[in-house]
Length: 462
Image (cartoon, rainbow, N blue to C red):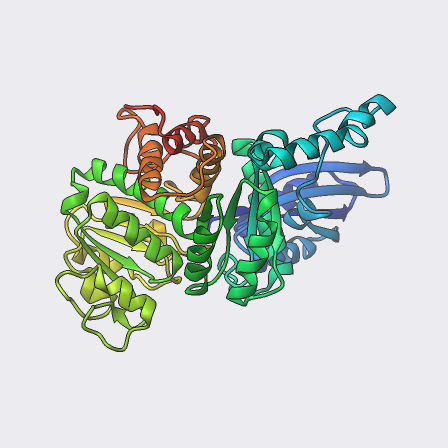
């Protein structure tokens, strides 16, 4: 059966016959149908009936509905109500604003608000360099999206993107103590997005671009970096690239290969693929081939789009052509940031010995990690239900913590390389193995190490 996940966790309220043995039958039926029971609570017990809340995880929404049907079919059991725990968690949103100062008395108000706040505003008008020190700007990030490339859902619009941006803001706070604000723009026009961000920039210490489709995202980032005096970071590009480079560094340690000597195939020439390639080249990789829907990108292919032509000009030094299977033959590393199922597991033996496979399409990867693991030496994915999860939360909280602490005005390639190295170094030699090449997102050392690396300070070594 497919692996279950808490993101498809449901609670069924059951009305059953007054027999506690029914609970065991329910648990057995759910297990037989591929679900995993995580909690059973008797909410009400009488001589007439039992009211039981059964919480279980499923593999997807369709599977969750199948579990409901299976339980409802049991003799003496009625499914009274089904609650999706993920939707319950989102009721009312996931973030809120709270005051850092007491507001209990008139004296408190006189300092936090009028008339005292006027003195602070005048001081900032006289000395703008103090704005970051005396306001939330020094610890705030705008998480900006147009809703055009949200997760694996595509162009679903800014309103539908809001739960994702809320989640991003919550992660900023949880892992780096940063106050982040979802900014969902009702435009997918490059000029309007750039102008909107420029207008709100005075209230923020950094801009995190999120879920904006390529190639528009490249132009937006380039123009904002040129016009703003605060750092602009596109997490789908640079956050992904940092974590991929960190994981690949350690994967190659496992198989005993050098980054500068391996052949790498990247499936996907969008925002993430382009940023990964750029950072790999900066790290010293010399042989990268990018494969898109039409096959390998090559500089002598005049049919390429401008963005792909630029990408091809710095990759594919051997000018290979062909589909993914053809290009993959003899390669040491596969990195997928493209689409589900594009890599067949039986192709992996055609790669070089001790192959490394990163299948990062989400939620459904390029190849089933369990199948890839039969042939590859190291496998990573974007999923939390398999080892070696490539998760951007390893990077962006620490990156912005370092940028804000340093009062940085820009993000440099050198910063990205240092951040990747810092994440890789969190995994010690005695911890490193094929199923542990990247630290967990809850590892307490990660955000501090990344922040220190961004600032250029000392960070942990092995």
